[in-house]
Amino acid sequence: GLVAAIVALALGMGPRVGILTGLSLAQTGEFSFVLAGVAGAAGLLDADLQQVFIAGSIATLAATPFLVFAAPRIASRIAGQIAARGEPVASERHAHHVIVVGFGLAGKTIARVLRSRGIRYTAIDANAVRVREAVARGEPVVYGDAARRTVLERLGVRDAQLVVVAISDPIATRETVALVRALAPRVPILARIHFVLDVDALARAGATRVVVEELESTLELVGAMLRQFGVPEESVARFAAELREEGYEFLRAPDTIIDPWLADLLEGIASEWVEVPASFAREATLAELAVRERTGASVVAVQRGGSANVSPSAGFAVRAGDRLLSVGGPAAIERLRRLLSD
Image (tube, rainbow, N blue to C red; front, side, top):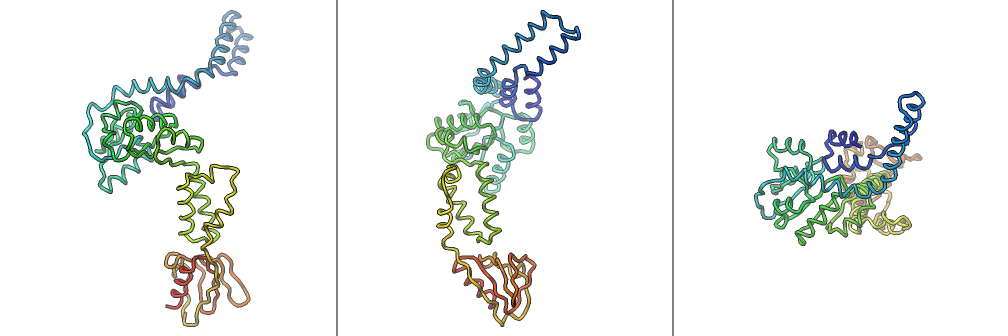
């Protein structure tokens, strides 16, 4: 357990995760019984000491469920005491600023966007090395535990315009969201979480909006699949936006059939054969025409004479007399006709 805690700290996971890891792995493993038996047979461990070792191992195994249950609270308390030594002594009071909790990849990206828009922010992180590096670059990052009331008060949480919780620990995320909501009932809270199972708990804790990495990756895969079948970008974006607006409900409910709903959503998409007019005197590739970018339609097949090219590549050259099977709304297909006529 101690070794695991040290490794977690060395990897920059912060004191809370390190302590939680150490407590969760503190028990003696079953392989220790094998080692004790071999040591006893080799005369390296006398019988009395071997019995003490076995009794201690059994005790740690029996205590494991209780230790794992209590580990989050123990880790939070100890980590909070450690972080308290480096808490910001004072915080410049901002009006309508953004508080970013966690300064890993997500937190840094959020801070960069805020900085580019001229929006004032303060970030907080429990990783001392990460904070020192950020401060050296002149970024407004402080060291501390955002799940502590005094820290949030010193950061001016009640006057914040927005709080973004971008840490990877689900328990710390829930505790931070609940505390922010208790201190600042009207401040919007955006929270990131890895798994869908934690969504409802975060919503109950007071999160205004929860972004679920597991579901966002699913949406990206579904969107990529729809694009491969020629569904226009605007329809893919609408599909994803409506799922997010409904709180990913269709993806979260395994028994829900989404096919009819998806069909209704994409109902406005039309497919039609569009003939390249004789006035189209030159050959041009689909990439040169930039069909999707300029019209919103997608060419999923090209008929030329008695042959057809299904899913033509961007380098496929279109010529007069070709018939293009185009997918898109009526307006998109009309824009394609005008593009070919110009």
